[in-house]
Image (cartoon, rainbow, N blue to C red):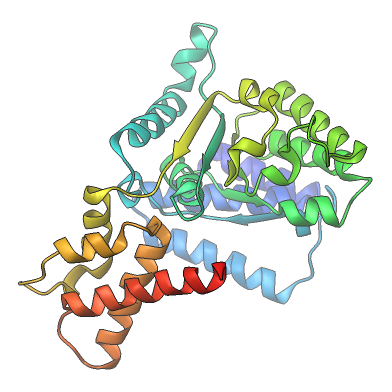
Length: 321
């Protein structure tokens, strides 16, 4: 059950009328209960939180606008759910090990890796990695809505960034800055404007000053656009690539599960999937599973998966035309 410290924090957040803090602590409590085998109780807490979102207006004494900028959730993803090469997996395992042993590192004047930059093509596992970090650390997953941060608050973005980093300090969680190149663009580019330069400078300052217990993850599909000063501010930079043959096989087996036919050959399927990302392969497998369910088929054959993969490839070709 809840620890005495968690109960005290809940009571304090309630009397402070800090709804964001209250919800974050509840997510942490749900994660704590799930970790201790109380899955039903953890699920009940999450369902109550979801119900409160639907039945009550968005309120926050911390800053009402942050309700539109930060989306909180609880992740049950584990590192086994992430299909990546061994090098990337080892880097993620090192981040997790340092988090779990952060008190030990602190005794030697060292801190765990908390500021992570993930770079690579869309659909290669960057967002899923943030979910895995949240699931493995039993921290809430908070996604920063970068498009709203910049377009809605142009001229005030630096102020909003400060409020976000204050929130990060007060509420331990995994914070995902997705599509990070929105604000991380190289300051020397010809199309750069003064406002974007100020936003990036503010982010660099806040990131460097951050000493919270949170894990900060920035993800980008365009690492070449990022300002070089960013790379020095992160504790780790991980580059993602399209899946290789072994990863494609694992993805397909994991995704189709019990629908895999006994005689299913993966050779042709793997060849058909080489142009696609992890996410697109997963979606193609999901499409095959749905078709098998709707047609009352007991298993999925090679032709069905290849057809779904080709549909994904054709969609890309039409988009490029």
